[in-house]
Image (cartoon, rainbow, N blue to C red):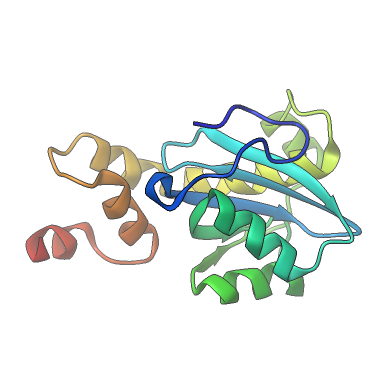
Length: 164
């Protein structure tokens, strides 16, 4: 759908193309963002100078629906907390802030440090849920991404499948 980007967004999606995202956000004067799909693939990334939370919410919404918002710092910034609250989704943050070395290892192919930090946050969040998401991939069920979204939101797989 979208190709890997080291700059601004490349394409907006229509409502029919809506995808669930793991949205990594690196807040600051230059706010970096990196969005993964629920299979862990980078969908979109970019940097916005002097972006407010409304601007980042619009960018996320133009690409898809977040399942989780991710931060690379612990505790996460107020800015990132606000974005998670706006979408009513979970906020992922590591127990201990990621070191520059950890972020470089995760995002070694990404040159821009703001995007790299956001990407590292998103990857760490993906890894937190990866086993359960792969388990869903092996299941013969419709709407796998919706099921993954619900699992990330905190619903047990068994309960979700019984309801369907």
